[in-house]
Image (cartoon, rainbow, N blue to C red; front, side):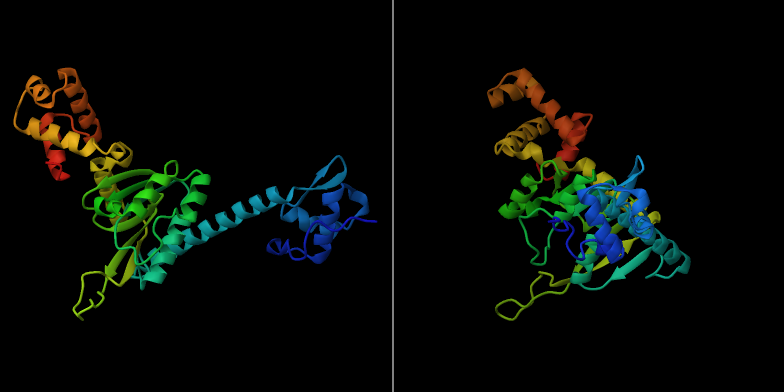
Amino acid sequence: MEPADPVPDGFLAPFEVSRAAEDLYGQLLRTATDGDRIDHAAVAELARVGLVQAEDGHVVAVPVRLAVERWVIEQEARIRRARLAASHYASIQGTTSGGFLEVIRGIDQAREAMHQVETGAEREVLCFDRAPYFSQRKGTISPVQESAAQRGVKYRVVYQQAVLEDPLIMAAVRNSTGLEEARTYPDVPVRMIIADEERALLLLPYGSAPDADGSRTDEPTDADAVLVHPSTLLDALVRLFGSIWSLAVPISSLDDTSWADEHRQLLQLLATGLTDASIARELGVSERTVQRRINRLHQLLGASTRFLLGVQAAKRGWI
């Protein structure tokens, strides 16, 4: 008795091949077939989409998973070419909504646009993360980010310090180790995502909800977004990210709960102008330990002198 066809009906629908080609593919998955004794039209269909190949005068099926992965890669390439073409023709139009800027109305449409920008990234995603989240699920890792990371896309994310006070968000950030390089900064200016330095999306919250007594609150209820295509504005946004990234503190350095208090005390003593020996006596540690901690602060804050160390610490509100 002949075994059942291992290819379910409609399984090859994305490849847009005929039923005869599907039947032939099912047969080829069981055994190779002499190329002279099969339907050449069906073979041609399967070969066109990479489902079969010839080996020593026989036609053999390419494994389903490999064929699907190849098809997905080709479709993604087509999507990228379509987006580039759209950007090109939009720039030719030269209008506000069709040139290097596109305004997207409403939070649902803004989320979809953010999803598309992130999905289209090939090399690197730069992100400013801050409230509000508009009731979006917190404490979970984005499936888009996981998929992108598997493709080799690098993530650099700067989180606003205030949002990390939410234990759900902080847990998600810690669970993202390996998927992103995360830092924190006191005042992230805008929620933003940049893909491959080729497009950026900025979220612009607005509106406010009534409080229990009927008064208005400052909590936004909706948002628009601005999609930025290659332009001097996009270049400026990339530079803005780089500037804040250089000032931000790696979240991994905050794992020790005593880290902030320890360094704040050290910075306050440095600000008084005390020598390393005097600071060591105040802290009850060796002078070498003080110097090691100061060097660590220089690395974290990117400051080459003690004066700049104080400036950077002040900017972050540490002293």
